[in-house]
Image (cartoon, rainbow over all chains, first blue to last red):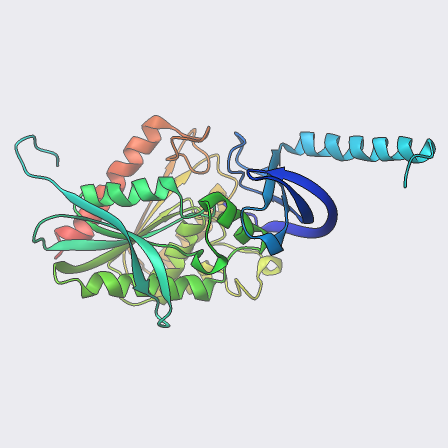
Length: 88
Length: 254
C-alpha cells in the first residue's frame, strides 16, 4: 500500500518530456508504488513544472540500491567538477 | 454465469455524478443491459489512479450482474493521463479521507437512486481503495457488503496520522455497518500479517460479520496481471471468493 513518503525540492534546469524540452521547477521525490518499475515500492523521481500542468513531467523509478548509487555518483561528479575548478 | 444461448449486454461510459457535498465529479459507470433489478457496487480505485485496470474491473463487475460505479477520487487534482494525475496526488501526500468519503457516499446514493437497483449496494477497493472501503463501510450508512483487497494503512501508528488522515480506520471498527471480506497476501508489507491479525481481533471484539482470506506466496496487488506481483492461482481463487461473498449479500439477500 502507499507509503505516502514524499518530499518536494525546488530545482532549476531542463527536462525532456513527451512534448520536448521544458523548464524544470520542482522535483518530487517519493518512496512509494512505482507505475512501471517491476517492484512493489521504488524511489520515484518526478521532475516537473507545476505551473505548466500535469503533463510537464519527467519520471524516473529506481530501486533503493540504484537510487543510493545515483546519489553517490552525482555527488562524486560534482566534487570532481569543484576540485577541477569547473563549477560556475 | 455465462451461458452461450443467453442475451448479454453492457453499457460502460464516463458520467458526471454528485458527491455528498453537491460537487460534480466524473465517474466510470458500467452496468448490465436489461430491466434488472441489479445490485449496485461502488468501485474504489487505488493509489496509482483511476486507470485502465479500474476501467476493466468496473466492467468485470457489470459482467457479473452489478451496476458498477467507479468515481474519480482524483478529479480535483486535474486531468491528464491517469499516471500524471496520480503522480501529482502522490506528491501532495494523497487525498483527504473526508473528501474521499464524500465522493463514495455520493456514488452509493447515485446507485441507490437508479430505478432498477435491487435495494442493495456494496463497495470494493484495492490498495488505498481497500483502506477507503473499510473507512466507508464504517463511516457511511447504506452499504450492504464491503470488499477490502490488501488495503494498507487500516492500522496506523500515531506518528502517521495527519490532517488528511486524522484517524486510523481500525479505530472505527465498532461502527462497521455491513459484512466485510478481506483479501490479503502473506508476503505483503502493508498490510503485514500482524496488521491483518490486529484488524481481525478488533472485528471479533466488536462482534462484526467478516471473512478474511490470506494467500501464501502472494504479496501486494496480486490481482494486477500487468505487474510482477501477479499470482494466477491466488487471483482466480480471490475473485471467486469475492463474487460468492457479494452474491450472498447483494443478490440472494435481496
